[in-house]
Amino acid sequence: MATATATATKSGTADILLESGTNELEIMEFTISGNVFGINVAKVTEIMKYLPVKAMPNSHPDVEGIFKPRNMIITVVNLPTYLGLPTHEETERDMFIITSFNKMNVAFHVHTVEGIHRVSWNDIEKPDATIYGGEEGLATGIAKFQGRLITIIDFEKIVFDISPQSGIQLSEIAQLGPRNRSLKPVLIAEDSTLLKKMITEALHEAGYMNVLTFANGQEAWDALREMRDSGVPIEDQAKCLITDIEMPKMDGHRLTKLVKEDKILNKVPVIIFSSLIDEAMRNKGAELGANAQLSKPEIGKLVSTVDQWILA
Image (cartoon, rainbow, N blue to C red):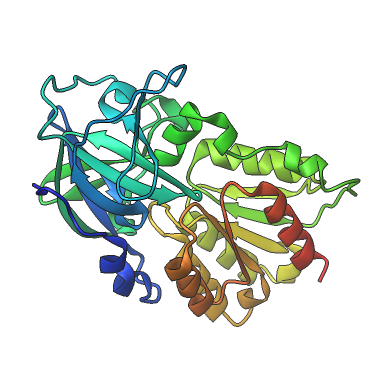
């Protein structure tokens, strides 16, 4: 279990993040009322003991309040109440997991932090649609580690549910001005059902009507190999590939590496669209040959980047 304050974890994962094509990640295991959950360490900046927070009027019921470690004001989400699980009456042993993604800093109130485990994305299964709210539920994957099942939570969806304005805004497409319709094929590898629908809708709104979606990097890679071996020019089947980073079975970095190492498929522009884009991740993506890297939820920039590579 974690002690008083832990050092920032992103620097501790930099070496792993900069390795090429390992298809691995580190999971921080934590518990709420005895239930075991996980978060990708790449999202975590720090863990620390629970501190008193200041409640904010008219805030979402699952927003506990704000606190100010050092010189940054951070919003605290009460994860037990959000998940509908029992809370602790005495909080002095509880923990904060402080995160950074989608260019936001949010603290999640949990009960214990158990440790960090390195696992392969290939060993992470997409949960049944009945778990945590159906196809658009909160579990992005189930990892098995030393006989335990760790439910990896979709923290982006939690933040979006609490603050919808933090997510993809289709109004950004209208700001791009008049658009022409295009049937050039755009591929998307994204495991979140909600985000896959929103990105597809945004591309349709932008005029891209031929959009193919895949639930993870492995499905996208299998489809790309079939296209490559079909005898049809690859540019007629895949004009551009948009990929998330965090996905079961095969992550976006591994997918990018495989595409860019293939003598035929390397013609396909790869755009990494992820909540995890920071300097370390950008270095990783560049090393693997990504043509562009954008941070969610900047959908207007994504469409402009697709325009750039498809019209090139």
